[in-house]
Length: 398
Image (cartoon, rainbow, N blue to C red):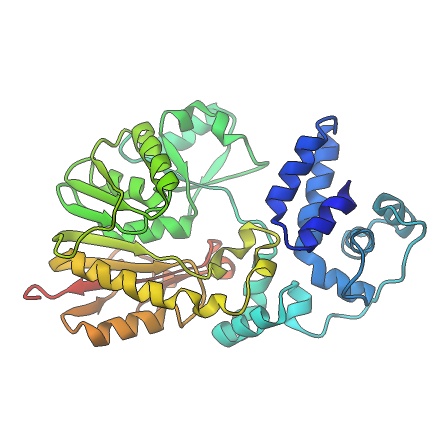
């Protein structure tokens, strides 16, 4: 069963989808069996390059890769590992250290080279943290209760948490992953699941009650709901996304959160909207969130680094056209790629002299989250996914 599932993942099928289909077709599996299958699929999917090095065979079979995972990385005795992997006998493994970052961290060569160029001596630590699952992070709905009150409520529901280090709205779940969707507190709209770095993007908008605010790339609405809470469910909050199904989910989540002032836009907003603040969390190569999926890195291609730049420039230009003189635009990505981050902002400022860059989160954002005047948080430094943001303001006479 594991060998068949792994074969499909190694051929390019998404690991989450393969695992879901396999479990659905084998409902007789025990709880331990389901857990073992998940660990096999996800870890072989993630560590395939390191395992191929151990086997000295880049095209090793799924059973051989599983053996290398169990014995070479997991320390299971060779005879047991071979039996569990479905091999007749153990196979020899290398004992030397992989010579390249790509092999050590199990990354495509082009991606390891790119991260080395972007991060220099920090690339090794960054890549190591991509191979550790990210925390489960919650964002309190401050329109309903405080962070401390949410922690107490979750504790009463059997979920232990600790405060986030960077966002005043964040709680990290401690211990085993709970079934959050079964909790009454979620059904009551008391919190949302949202990475702490993502929460910082919403906070940088600094939305205020009574303002007109636009979330230009709303997705399913996590940051839209955050903006609505900051606005205390007043003013005018608009959300646009080209994916209609995501907007439908946004409306459901807004209702659960008690936000009645969210206006879903089914077509792009028009220039001259006169918004006070615009958040443009644009589509990107998503290198900052690679730890969220064991096989995401292997489904990317080198053109991912440049595929979105034209769209990003267009979205930023539209955001600028929608904000009033004296208003604010927050441009954000979840990637580590200068071409999609600093370069897009620099090109924009050259074309729009009526806008200027401002320090992000002045007075409240910890200096450790700021680099060269931009928000930059990463897994190895901050424990968050990787995010970039620039705060841009339009001149009052613009």
